Image (cartoon, rainbow, N blue to C red; front, side):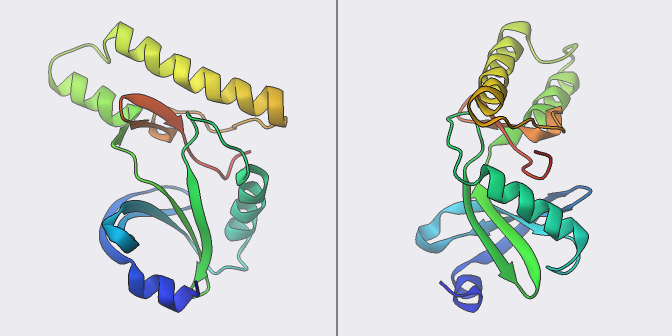
Length: 156
């Protein structure tokens, strides 16, 4: 699919967040499926995009139930766009939700389950693929269906 036809089949709905490398948007993909689209800051030939693309090539064929699924890598309007599955929230969001509810943090049993998921994915990356995730933090641990999925592909 070309970048222009891809753009026509995907309608951006809302901005989900931003970080040091780019912005993440909610998009409606063909078939009505919601996806997350990360648009890297700067032009495709910018250093940020180059680093992100290099990392994506390392991780794109790695599959694990606790790694966020990478679905497409495209260049749209001379900017790198990365399409992934859409998470329900992040561990940071869950922590903030618990604090607002008057709790000291994420309940222990729930948090331990999340940490087991993350450890399983990180061990898999290291042991099977000799990859290390260099930016593990609550905002990069995404919750999908009650489990953690490790995200942020640029720091491998």
